[in-house]
Structures are given as structure tokens and as C-alpha cells.
Image 1 (spheres, rainbow, N blue to C red):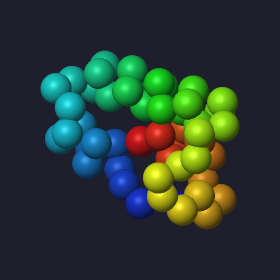
Image 2: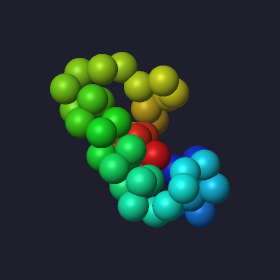
Image 3: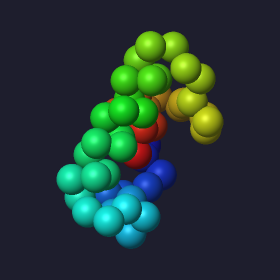
Image 4: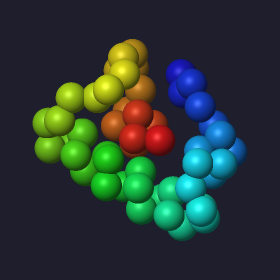
Length: 50
């Protein structure tokens, strides 16, 4: 289960659009084989990226 909400993430970036771009880039990195910086549990890469 996700540990953070979108509302928590928006506080850390200037706009929701920037959040989408940052999460997309991280998801691409995770999909290409980079290790996540936190425990995966059963979360998908898109959730971990946030």
C-alpha cells in the first residue's frame, strides 16, 4: 500500500504538472532496472516513483 498521498507530494514541488514529470522520470528509471530507494512491498513502479 502506498505510504504517501498525492497531496503530500504536491507540497514538495511547485505544481502538479511538475510532480507528474518527476514521477514519470523516476518510474522510467525503475522500469529500466534501477533499484528503488525504499522497500518495494507489492507496490508498482509508478507508486514507488511518487
